[in-house]
Image (tube, rainbow, N blue to C red; front, side, top):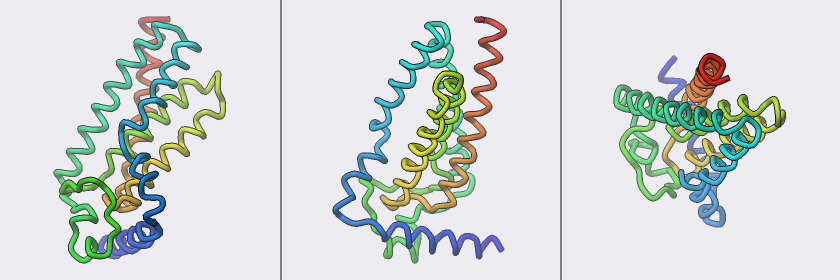
Length: 188
């Protein structure tokens, strides 16, 4: 059954990846670049400051730094434990892949981009929900677009993204709860 799931994952990857065209490659390379999200992160931190104040901002920066370090390290642990080759390195897949990314590291299960962007979306969306009710939906769409960019550029399978987004969502929720606990106990 696991082999069948992996085969479906490869087929879906090849279908989605080959939908791309040179016309859109530049846009997806910009979307997949980690630096592209920095203006959004700056805006979210500014909104936290405006809506919750200076102390809340400082705590949010510390919690988010811990959250990103946590999701990154767990992602790397999974990649090194499972050693699932990325599509751009997998026999029988790499020859059929539209590889657009500037590089291709060894292992891809699960996606750090998907994990980090979803964790940030859930954390910030929940934190700002009392003030900006629909922001979380925009952040979820942003996270999905970032995740899809990894298939587009040829470095992740859809299952890598699904697992990364699930882990990121759970992490974002957990760190949001940690933020609330610390804020209520020590700051409020």
